[in-house]
Length: 365
Image (cartoon, rainbow, N blue to C red; front, side, top):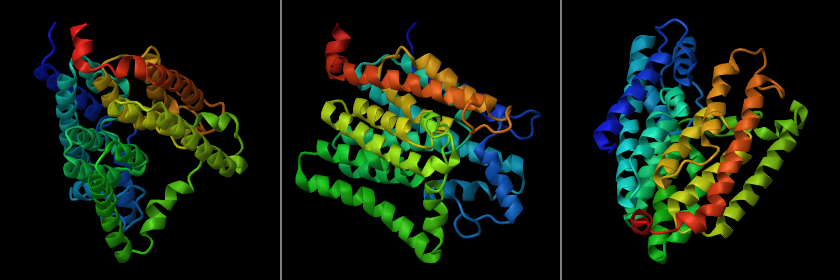
């Protein structure tokens, strides 16, 4: 059966609708979502403007999405507006991934599997800002591969304004730009726009940096596999140092791998981050899905990885202390980490043997 874009969009819209319904606060037994929790924070504080009326732990673009949604006068309209904004970015994600896959000779069925049928995508699409992050990041990489560095840098900066994580990719991107002038331009635009927006808000509210960025620095371990090594909260500061060491080591290994494929390299960098971060919320798995679709392969451990990731939120509210080592959600989080590590090893060792083969060669074979 030949897969075309119409089928991808139709299955994608079905996935969005299902995600919208399972989190819809008007329905009995709706699943938790961060989006709804933001509303109750707005209602409790009787405020609407993030960073000014109340502290908000996400960067300014995420705050803007929340602010626009908060114009609604009730929870259901707020949730619907928020969901529509996510849908717009989800459609951008599908379009960008479809174009990249077509150019690489990758079957579009991979988009259906990873972007529409994935349990993680369905559960966490209408949940937080991760679809927005993924859409902007994939768009940035797409323009980067076209040598349209100005557009790529703008999208890269917007990505960081949704969530800062993509900044760990910046050195890898800059190393791929041969022209020194273009490299400097890319760095200045990527960091300059991001810095300017944050400086404006910080000037208007001096508490902004502390309430937004340092807030998560003070956060404890959440779904990190190394809670098994640091089960006591008193040792979590040491765990964060351990986390930083692992991150540096993992990024160095990716750098030494010297993959020629920017999508493969981006997948490895983000996987390293997720495996070494002391915060690995299940919605973050969305970041990897379009990259897996673009690579055009299903790693051996993927299905179990996706299942264990979804199981974290499905069991989260079934226990009294879900962040405690030995709880059901943390057991699934450790299982997920093992499976992601297997997936990363498969991509890492296969990157030179499989991923670096030109798309036309793989297609003709």
